Amino acid sequence: MKNSVGKLNMAIGLSAMAGFMAYGFLLIYLRDFAPGKEAWIASNAMGAHFESRLVHVHGNLFSVLNILFGYLLLTLPIAPNTAKWVSRLAIAGLLMPIGIMAELYFGLPFYLVLVGAVSIIAATVLLAIGVWKIPSNKDQAAIS
Image (cartoon, rainbow, N blue to C red):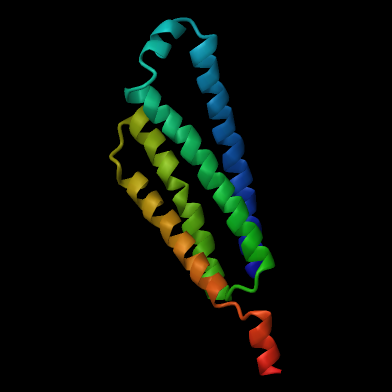
């Protein structure tokens, strides 16, 4: 179970990263090559253009976090229940950039952004606690 949990985070993280990278290339196209690029550049620091950059940056950051968390879940002896919750919460963290995109393009409310933000923070804290609970070599030597 634990190994599939880590693999899932890594697979979703890599897939999401590919999607957010492609979105970044779209933003480059809109800035450098698209008709009307001057208007895009002129309004670059505000509104939808700023939000679109938030999607790209946070999407890739949270993708990398999922890859890293997945790797740590695969390699560290984190308690299985903790590992399952870290995995789920880290994946749910991707709702933050997805929520920003949903706000930007579909006018949806900000709730997904909040759920994603709370989820990635909770995953990070829970993983920190799980790592903290791993016995050190000194602790294991004292037991044996």
